[in-house]
Image 1: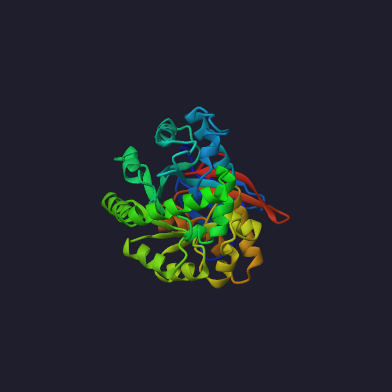
Image 2 (image 1 turned 90 degrees about the horizontal axis):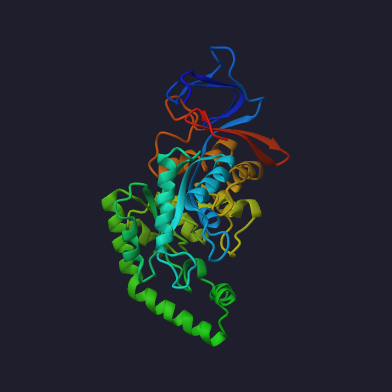
Length: 381
């Protein structure tokens, strides 16, 4: 970290409630010290580009593709984390919650030891200052899996865990409320005949009915005891939302219907949708469009999910396509709102006293280009 204050001049600053042409200064501790006109010469010339807070990503499944780039191939875990981190940072993301799985299919390519190896690699990367972004762990807990509680023990006493999502991919509900969509997905994946598929569905539904409700309660209790934020996942009905509210859920990830998103938003949960959904113009699985939720006023947070660069692109796209959403409001969906939802009050906004996590963005046509990234005032990309 430089011992000298930094100046970012000739910038288009995206503040909490306005867009301002001006400059921003950073003190020797890596905090924003002022906004307005610089009081000293020199500094970094933004050339009129946008200057935004660093993006805050709550749910990315992107790490696994670097660790397991092909079936049965395992890359060096620390190297995989570094490659993932470089792509994350160059997409403008300065705070990231890496999603690791707890509870999975018996024939899954990755197993629980792999999840622990990745968690250790993330923590090693942080400790050895290998990483550009600030990394935390998000556990994706499949409550319908028989081993989910035992698998969670792999992460006992791990302070990097700041978020848990409670998922249930049982056929006939939530993401797979359409049985036809479920059959297409799993028959293609497993090569089942129609009879085998019907038997698989019956067994999955019976298993979930026996264990999912209790697993959901126990995991929520563990999260409350350890101060870990909880997210629901793929809620489809008001009953799902009421269940989430009863478990003190903060974030509603990827609600699949307008009904569930509206109920979640009105209950005070931050409604999170995928940025790829915005960029593509709809859900790849046929569920509610993120843009429809944005137009209705029920979208709070965006996540890059499986495409890191989609986060900054979706923010500019929403601001450009939806009249009711200003650029500051769209940027808040990828900065201050996710930061506040997870309890990170020291970042996510261009304001004095907050961390100088910054990204410089130029809009070329309708696609943003990230031209510089700083974390706590230090350039990382």
